[in-house]
Image (tube, rainbow, N blue to C red):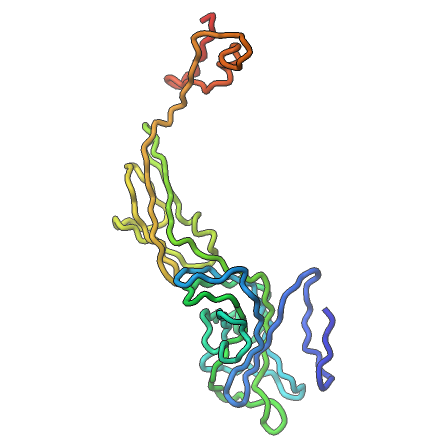
Length: 297
């Protein structure tokens, strides 16, 4: 929470933090050699990624905007080609070399995430198909060569240094495997005209992802009404791939059933000992009337 000492002194590139909150910050610099460099934050995954499997990725990130390290030069909002963006990287080995950050598996570049203004923490998500049994993850500004459009000029004495610096805070990074298939069983009771399913409830596990559904019989949408038993096939379409799905509709007699003993034996074996046995049994429903008969009729 305290502003660290800055080499050279005189600068205070600090922003307010939040009480009792913890997060990791990383910075990037657009250099005069037309290359964007970055710090990166990394961690070892709890378990290796499974090649060929889809994964859901999410994190909270706060874009801290732009600044430069020479006070007498103004901060420039320089248009870049390609534009600034966040890269998420996965690797079998610990991510230590610059070359490992050159080709991220996930690119995030929404305007509020990469713009020049300070934006509060927001959640960003993506999905990917693992290409190798990666055990490490890293997040940083995407490293790449770029061009800067006029009137932006390099900041620093004699034109050396950079165009600008940029920072971000990251927190609550999550990576979850997406199931290989989707299955659901519904019951269509006798006398009941229909039963329903809403697949949106199933995909709420993966918020902010664009997910659609492709029913094999041509039906469209996530909410569906079934009035006939059968097996209905559907593909769940994620931005990074598809998984097969199946909804099985079964018919069943759902009427409650009651067993009323015809005799009572008060021998203490908990079987038809008292009339209480009737009251503890399911109640028969006939013509919407409840009927319970005791031994006196």
